[in-house]
Image 1 (cartoon, rainbow, N blue to C red):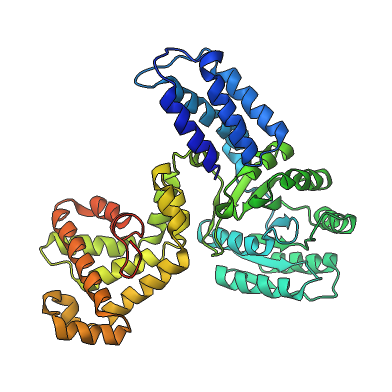
Image 2 (tube, rainbow, N blue to C red):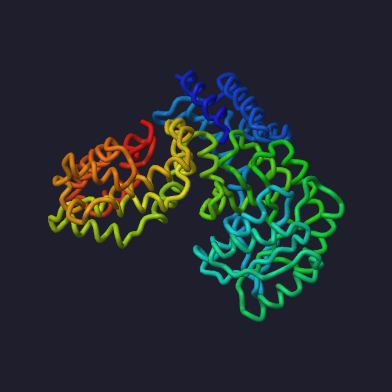
Length: 464
């Protein structure tokens, strides 16, 4: 997000040198670059003016300490002010969901059609079930699109939550009343209510969702908005904020937004915290919004904390400890272990979103990674190992020309791919030998490095 800002700031950092204090003169060029980058990112003009005013106010007279140059010192000011504007100045409890109510805590989702409300309902349900250990029920009050009801049922089942049926032709208030009664009767912690959207803001839609909000008295009324709306996000956010007592914002499709203006604009216009951010189509592409991490990503510094969370959530710690113990007792790392490692890589989810959380120098790699290509290549790789006998997995040195041909035929790949896999395995095996005395912590670091496409290794079949 906001790639141009990252690039512009990097350029200015290199040119601003040798001064002990930030002044209007030595920050003039950099502030102009910030202004242009924000406008290019489709940030609303009032927001741009506010950002620049706050940066200028905080920067003037700031001392350049330690080994920093003036450009680096100014980037620090920019990061702090961006963090504050997108929600970093709010206490943590305001950025979290409110469960301090009599169960069920009702969460009402509102927004335009196409913003991703129904998918967000599934993602939110999964997060509540998996991370918060809540018992969750979902219901659709979109009585205009049968597909919306079916879609909510499907994503709810994938999320591990329960779905309450509704049908086209029913009144939204009747559906909501029945769903609340069911949630109370069966002691659900949370009821997620998906509402109808429109292609544009209209009075009938706003009246309907306002009536639902009045009836349900939800603990949370979340405004779901597409991050790619840019300037249009301001008008949409303002309209919903005027009609509904919004408690927070969910920013969807953030990974598809090269501009990123919505994150700044919507928070500024509504005054409400961004509570969640959605990426990718998978239900795993959803996380609580972290203003500091987002500001770092905007400035090209990466979101390392978020990256570590994503990777460690996908790694089976018990299996990693088992492998560490095996290696510590002198046993060899074999192809069965290698297969298990690759299978865990497949659980990470969106590789492109993982790479986007890395610092700017890795962003070029992120732009080349296509998740469908990675998953396809991973399946081919696992297929090659599955075509081997148990003995071949334990002793890869047995795999000579005739065996390679048999394995390749069984996996439906060229022999060259078998050769590439064996070469990559040898490299990983050598790494394991070097790490033998390092234990689990060093091995965990390896999980995020050696086989990640675009990062020097790559799965067999992936373009170099």
